[in-house]
Length: 199
Length: 199
DNA sequence: CCTACCGATCGGTAGG
DNA sequence: CCTACCGATCGGTAGG
Image 1 (tube, rainbow over the protein chains, first blue to last red):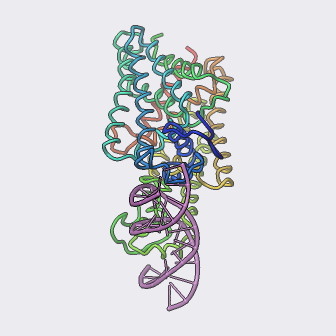
Image 2: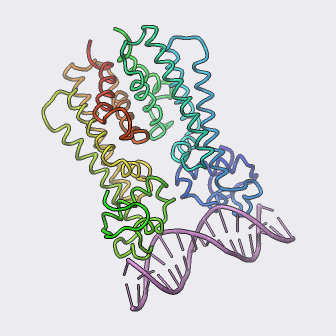
Image 3: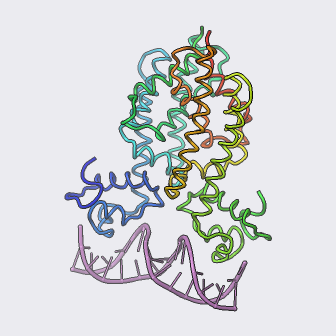
């Protein structure tokens, strides 16, 4: 968003800096991106960045934590309302694809680089990922308990199947594709459920 | 495999070097691993590596191409025999999990770093990935054509679901887990098929 | 495989 | 935000 991603730009805010870093990190990796590349893309000298940031790693942390928070906030919203297990599972997957769609570059950085943060941040992200997965597990267990899903279904594996498909979308999803984020997530849920729904 | 991964070791072959680099690349990323780290792990000076290799990138290329080849060889073997579409799909997924199991660190390097190779290598890997996916698509299309799988099934999405789950396993699979590679892949196929099989 | 070293570049700082 | 620069480290080489 915001201003240019190459050549020179005018007003440079912290947000512009994070946007540019997000694009570069997603394309070249965190370790493969230098602070000079970020400065070049903003049209400033590399030393000038340090009036906005204290370190390169701080920028990575900001990107990763914001994505993790966005995934989690959406998952909480998807499961807190009423609705059948089937509807909630659909909402969870729709949220996931929505985040991937809206924040594609940041999501790539999140998946590829979160393990490279310091151990405090890694512990925080790990806890958030666990809660995120638990929203899926809870919904499927509910469906099994209510009798809507087949008894004896391997809940963990069913969740792993649909959640893996969601997690993997950042590798191939593009807005120029033939399907909308909703169509993709609904399709994943439908195929998974036809194996889980009692018949 | 081979010799030590830390401290000093004795005989150092090209294989040892690649093994050590594979472990380090998988843990710290390619750009985050220095040739001195590789040399330290082998117990030699960094300059000494260059009697075995011509560049750091050559080592990455070797790792990535060998994994891509192993995935593809297994997929060809899984689809060339007789067997129903269901059996072949199971064989494809079993092969995938088998490679992840046997070559875990190398597989991690493959997924995380293949895009960082030069464009010739990226083109080669892209073609191999396309063929790999086509083995899955072919098997599912066969199942739909023969009437074993539901008509009107979205073949692309069903393949994407099960293949994404396979692709994602490198992120969480460990030998210390409760399930074998066969159990995991069979479970993925079963859940996917119960949504595809005519009933 | 070692010693010794190279030019380039890294993230980051000082002082305007 | 710039100029000027820092110590450290990078991948790689020469010549044993």
